[in-house]
Amino acid sequence: MNAKPRIHSVDTFIHVLYKLGHPEEIIPCTKILYNYIHQGLSNIKPIDLPKLVCIRKRTKKRLETSVEQRFDTINDRSTFEYWVIDSVLGLKPAGESSIIIWIERQASYTFTIKLPEKKAEYVNQAGLNYVESYSIKSITADNGSEFALLSELEGIDIYSAHACSSHESGTNENFNGLLREFVPKGISLYELTQEEYSSHK
Image (cartoon, rainbow, N blue to C red; front, side, top):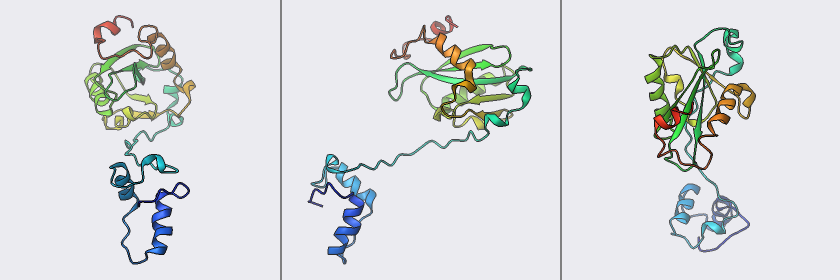
């Protein structure tokens, strides 16, 4: 592991080239080798790698019902109680506050909620708080990780909009544009109170 191969990946170098010359040695798995490199336990540095492999834990998505399966009464906006939701950030760093936008499709009735962070558990808690106050039969959301647990809300049908299909949530896009006049991108929402941005609705 003292050499600095720039042509071969760590996996290829260790488990193919190195193993050919040292067949009796026990070779650790690739993930352990990458950990050694990042911890400075090897002469190889991350910059020496031809391609850095990243292994990330992903929030499990549970929005499995597509908007294509919504009832006609939802699509034609003929009845009340069917909602779309979206989230807005001022800044993107982890831990930044966010705003969740709720819009009823027929009446375009809208309310907004400030959350401590853009996380699924906060979205669900806000949903639980408002389900009893508002008539909510269904929610349509995109596949953002903050909406990954919506299906845990009992008695509410959850629909998933397609990625990069803003036309499926035009009502949200219009309101987001209005909201951005008062909450521009690049401005932290941390100091903004619920009362301050609610006054701009």
